[in-house]
Amino acid sequence: PPEAGAGQVRPKPPLARVCAPLAMTAGSGRAASWAGGAGLRGLLVVGSAAQASCQYQGVASGGVIETPFAAAALWAAELPDLRVCDQGVNDAGCPVRPEHGGAGFLSSVFTWRYALNNLRAALIAAASAGAADAAPQGTAEAVVQLLAAFDQLMQQPVVDALGDITQACRGLFDSIRPWLASQRPAALQLPPRASATPVHWRWPSDGQTLVSQAHFTLRTGARMPAIGFGTWRLWAKAAYQPVRWALEAGYRHIDTAEGYANEAEIGKAIRDSGVPRDQLFIATKLSSVPKGLADPAYTEQIFAMQLEQLGTDYVDVYMLHTPPQDPAQLRLLWSIMETLYSQGRVRVLGISNCDVNDLREVLSVAKVPPAYIQNLFKVYKPGEQMAGSEDIVAVAHENQIAVMGYSVQTEWPHVLPPLQDPHIRSLAAQVGRTPSQVLHRWALQRGVGVIPKASSRERIVENARLLDFELSEVAMRLIDGLATLSESGATSPTKPVGQEDVFGLSALSAGASQPAAAAQPAGAQVQTSTDPAVNELLSLTRDQGFPFAAVRDHLLGAATNLPPADCHLRCMAEPLCEAWEVCAPFDPQAGCEGCYLIGRAPPSTTVVQGWHAAVVRGTAR
Image 1 (cartoon, one colour):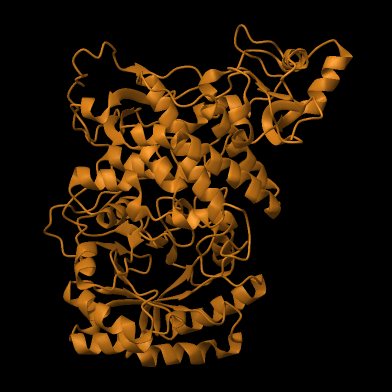
Image 2 (cartoon, helix red, strand yellow):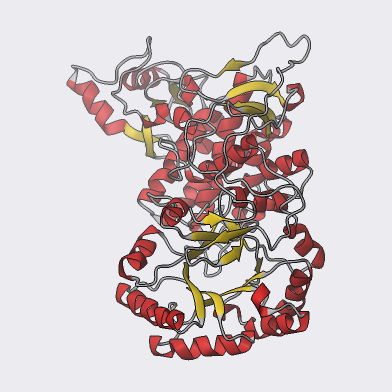
């Protein structure tokens, strides 16, 4: 990785503190046990949070931490901005591609995934801890079905299908809201870390290091403060006072852009502050040209105007605000920026909002390679808006490129606000810090610099206090894992790539990822037959099911362990049965409890991977 400063900051080794034995509630009559089968393999539930005598210890072999899965599931599902899309994409606030972020197609998918995966973890945690109050029957199956529906929607984005899936999600959460509200946070024992990724870095935490002193040493030899002040959405005159306050609070790294329309006010704030130019690190962006709003021929004129407004004859970083879509234009713009670099008016070249392909394209043609990238970096989206097949942060570090993260504490570009996330708020309470401080310290310990933006003096000072505490290895792993809850679907492997599966989602997904004809546990029946009629039935009903919300009030009893053909025959023999569905292979730990008979069903099935279903009587509706 790029060299990190202030005491030779390096990737963080495992901590060595030891956790005391766990004390279970007297008279509970149960010991802590590993969840087996296809459930939470690798995740030990030790009871409620109140039963853990050793919470929040950073230990090389794992640790116990309070984890509010149920609260997080309910919180995400009831976000007002998510409800805007309950009826699907529409003109009343739920567009396919929102121009400035917020409610929309992708926001709905990611937020519902987060709610559903938290619910899935809450179900397993409650069952493994021996909770007396079980969730309503069929909840686990519904979660798997809905995650699979979102998986298919992302593979084949039929926009009109979003409404049906979101209504089914809403129906499920309406039905289990009392149960979710009654659940206490689980005290979870994290397993020994099985992967070296993502890498954790160690930064000063003694309270003696100034905010300007924790730095990266870039490939050019320049020192860049790892904690900067961001000015996005501080438009025009609104930027002046916050920048003054930031400089008074000790920030020396200021980030702006042509597109923010505030460079003149930032330049005035710098002049009025009296801070010498050589003590500042100024990063700005070329916005209009790569976005197609100005011709590349005007690039040098635009840059000269930016220097004039900032009141300086050079900037420390000049970056493309976004990679242009045309590779030829990308090469042209990089060549122009290299000219500015050779003239000494730019000290470091960079690029923002890029993916791995963009970065490699620049590296392949650059005479002066980038030393800096600035990307979205938050607990739900650590590096890119859409998770790719490679980790952009890891690729950047491999190429000696420093990474700065923006929107660490904001909901943009979607609707999950991390400052309100029950997981983050719980951790913040345990370490005695604000959610914003926890989020920004987490990013630093992931090897990513931060540029928190705030408009009040109090928040600006708050966000600068990141060097007098440290997040334990256990806390880091839990926060790392939040991305898997928003990115992972019904089947393994978990996403994003390179992220540790700290919550055991791959094991939870094992049953959902197996084909119907796969080997099954003892007692289950193989879903193939020598009878051509049975095989035809299996073929016609495979990967079909019903939204759980549409049938949950019409189930004719509990699920039974029957294969699809027998489930069909049982339905035909039951006069009240209008439809049936069955998941395969049978695996209750993975949410597959077998055959359901349905007394009233929708007129047709929908695609649900891993299930068989059919409407058998014409009165179904």
